[in-house]
Image (cartoon, rainbow, N blue to C red; front, side, top):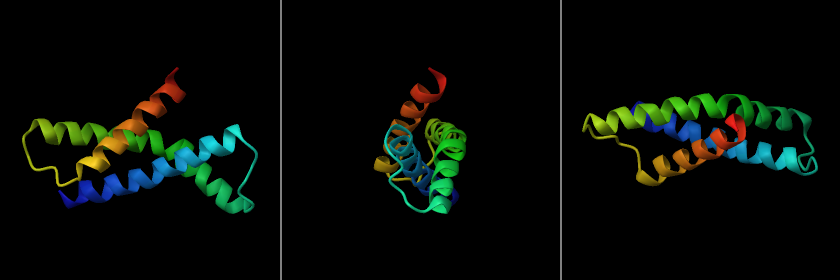
Length: 92
């Protein structure tokens, strides 16, 4: 399940970009580079939620099939907490 570990790490990076996107959205634009700003917004606002949702579903299916996940628990919990925050922001 090394591919699940890799995708979970990518999702964590997207979730960090999501947190930065929320900081950019609700405060002044503190990132000076426009290209970096656009990159963070695309990763955080467009890609993070669907990818995070898919990875959490895959983790649940793998966990319920009693296979070794191979993903550290702190990474799974962090991605799940970000998923809850994204659901609150996008769906409510």
